[in-house]
Image (cartoon, rainbow, N blue to C red; front, side):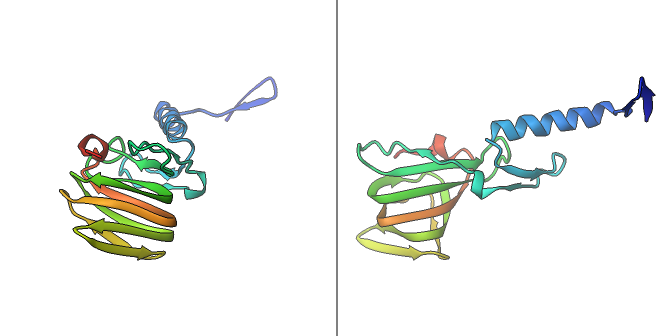
Length: 158
């Protein structure tokens, strides 16, 4: 460390500064949800308590649906993931992408071909690409979704 007029200065490597700036920018862009990220490998962790879901337009007024993509094609070219919440709502959806849902709390029902697939907290649901379903929660459901490919929103028909 160098001292100048009683103040200690550290020699800072340009790459260290670039890495710090990249991390700060990434956290700002993700709303501060990223707890830790290794830029070289792409490994990252998301702080679920900082995820703020936004209203999701199902195309039907009055539906109570919120979601937030937390891992997008910017972070991973293959998979995306996010959080979704549904309250006393059901809405039709066609998936042109594969999706796995993990129910955190509540009860999620997926209706397809006259059959109700019911998932409770701790359950997982696989919805293959090409499925025309109805997402439903009589009370509420909060769940994590993982999609393939990562650009699911560009594949969606709704």
